[in-house]
Image 1 (spheres, rainbow, N blue to C red):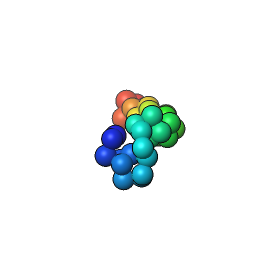
Image 2 (cartoon, helix red, strand yellow):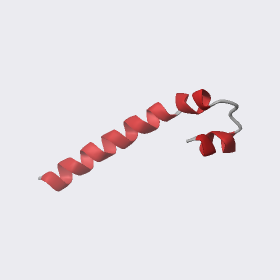
Image 3 (cartoon, helix red, strand yellow):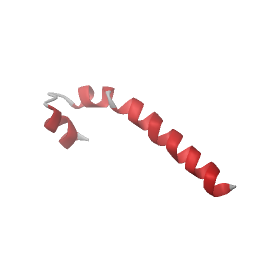
Image 4 (cartoon, rainbow, N blue to C red):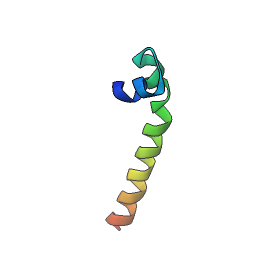
Length: 40
């Protein structure tokens, strides 16, 4: 995460973390969808 923040030019990890929540939600939704497909 810190490497990504540095690449984006963020001075603090908190700035980068502000943008990870939507990505986390999308990853969770994708995992749930895939689970539904694979689970039946």
